[in-house]
Image (cartoon, rainbow, N blue to C red):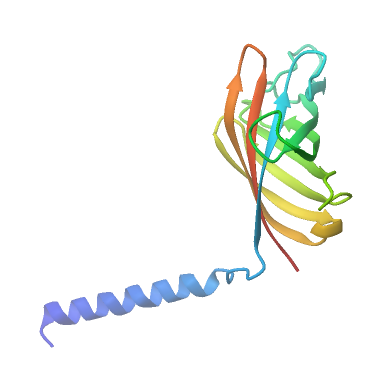
Length: 179
């Protein structure tokens, strides 16, 4: 073999070996993977607020950007982005501003289903939400009822935010498999 062809052959061999090694370390695709797309209807002010701060660091403002502020959440979960669409449950839990610069929020959220198909079941979501990013990925760590042993990930995407009413619509895409 001529030197350039020998070099090309060795490069291809090395590249294919690296690709094989990387692929062999990835988990295999899940055959029983399911994806649910739901919408959180979030209201942060007024008498019908569904998310509110309950405690923070003494002497500091309690806000989404203030380290140490803890919020409770009870958002309606709907099947479409319209606040008037069919409700399938509630997103209930806590949000804790967990980074000194206020960029990250630790989320512990239960999606508690109330519709006929999944009534009494829940999906448990946990992780760090990088709240200044539109795409935020968290872990699905468990579930109950029809979601028992669920494992996967959840993506939160803010579809709209109205500062004058402090209302947000957040698309929640849950991808999970059950063992």
